[in-house]
Image (cartoon, rainbow, N blue to C red; front, top):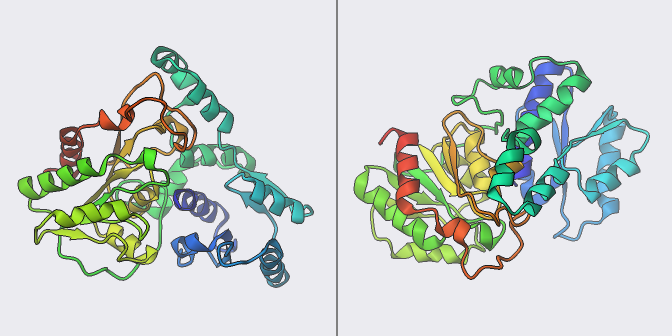
Length: 341
C-alpha cells in the first residue's frame, strides 16, 4: 500500500514534465486500486485480483485491451519485482525503465552490526533521502529534467511540500479537530506495542482538546483493546472503514502517529504532518516521512535493521528497537508537530 502511494510522486513529476498530452495508466493489485483510481493524473487503473482468482492471462488480457485503444509507449516499472519483470517480458517490444530500489544498499545495511560503521558509511553509502526523491533523481537524467524535486513540489503545491498526492474524497463524518493513531503494520515486529499507543491516546485526551481516532483494518484484532478507553473524544474505527473512508479520515486529520506503514504515507500524501515510528526497519531504507513538518523516531542499535522488510523474528528476548521508544517521546514529538493544539 505504501509503495503505491509513494509512486504518486513519480506520476506528478511526469505530468509536470510531459504536459497534458501524456496519458498514464496504473497497474496494481485490486486491494490497492482504490488508492489511485481517482487520482487526477491517472486515466485508468488496471487491477489484478489474485485473491479473487484472476490469473496472469486475465491481467494480460486487460492490458492488451488498453494497448489496442491507447498504444503504450513506455513501461515504468516502479516496483522492481518478479511479477513486474514478467510483465515487461510479456511486452518486450515496448521500451521500459525500472527504478533502482537500492536493494543491495538496504541488504548491506542489515549486515553491518555496528552503530559506528553505520554512521561512518551513512552519508556516502546509504543516505537519508526519501525513496520518492531517489526515483526522481534517477529519472531526471533520462528525461532531461533539471528541476526534479522542485518541479513536483511546485506542481502539486502541497501545504508541507510533500511530493506525493492523492485525490480529494468526501469528508468522513467525525467530530474534530482530531489526531489519528495508526497502530498497524504489515508485520507484527514493526508495531509499537498497542499498550503504548493506548497510553499515548489517553495522554493526548488528558492534555489536549483533540479528539483521538484509531484507524486499522478488520484483521487487526489487537486494536480491540482500545475499546476500553471511555471518552467522547475517542473513536476506535478499527474494521469500520473502507480504504477510501480511511483515506478521507486521514486527509482531514491534524496529524497522524503510526508505524512504518502505508497509513502514514497516505496521511503525508494529503499534506498531514506525521510522526513515524521505526523499529526493526530503518529510515535509511528511504521510507521515512518526507513532508516538511513530519518527523520520525528511530533508535540506533547494533542489530538494527535486522531485515529489509521487518519480517524477520527478533532473536532477542524483547523487541528493544520498539520498546525503547517511550510514550512521552512520541507525545512530545507530536506536540511540536501540532503546535500544542
